[in-house]
Image (cartoon, rainbow over all chains, first blue to last red):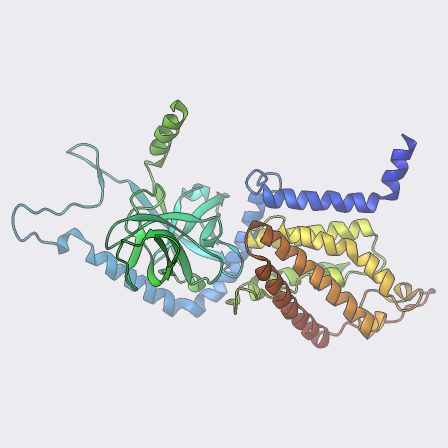
Length: 283
Length: 174
């Protein structure tokens, strides 16, 4: 027993070092379980507030760009108004993008909330951003985040007034998407190389793809509404040994100058998920 | 003490709001200089508190860039290795008693440069190694360590030249 104490005393520095290393690595590799353990929520509030103050200054330098983006988004939205469309004959009707439960009421499936970006990284391998809107304002984990031009990311953790968003430029981010022209759905992810480009893998060669084709979110995503731009095809990477090609997409969103984003809530996600989980258990 | 605290806050803020927000020149180049704080900690600090401060310092940066544990692990490593390096590289017996903290004047130009270069390589190497465990190839790892360390050393050199710390010779009587 005495020897053990002597050993510990002798190598206390080293043991303490090993202890700190293990703590750090556990926090790193067990990211999700340890949020509470390392006061992550309290830290969000502090770093979020600091980021907000800093953003108040840098905001002015980007006002022009932000304004242009918002004007462009408004224009796109105006063009989608139902009043713009007129059926050339009486058999054609225009439907608004809402889910019908019964014939008398239309139910809003997606709720949008705008939020200001207060902290944003693009230089890491796992990038994230902080937005100034949290649980108190209705933001929950796993909601989608959309910028003026297209998809930005997904909420991964929240505190009272702030939320941290895993940006599309993150190794762990995967999104169900489809080619707008032909409608096939594939998964898009980031390869960590260039913040302007994301990758779409395993596209069969029989699908005609041209440079400049638009890729949008698919109907299979339970986080995003369908049809939100993700990017445009910039390069078709041919793999000679297989029947598939990879597409390199120029992201619709410019991650360098994000100022305002919208958090989109799927009000039916819980229901869909509960049903899917229950089915999974039964089988 | 107060100076250390101000430095702590300043280094974190500069790293987060200046260096992290520079659009990346290349995927290999990430400008890191914040760990210079650990290199500048005083000689007479006990090793336990040195490691504790390094850990907290790394964790603070982690909270800002949302990578909990990553920088903390690398900082703890250099906080631990620092003591050994200082005792090997110190030119004459007792220099660590006569000066406050490592610098060109207290350690001499060549030993101090060696000290900074080794710890920079260790810090960046370990940081990028942890990243490499999750993805990437060996060449990616090697290229990124070298490019990032080059930029780090350049930044540290600029800071050392711009903000020369006044190291006074301290006698035993003082």
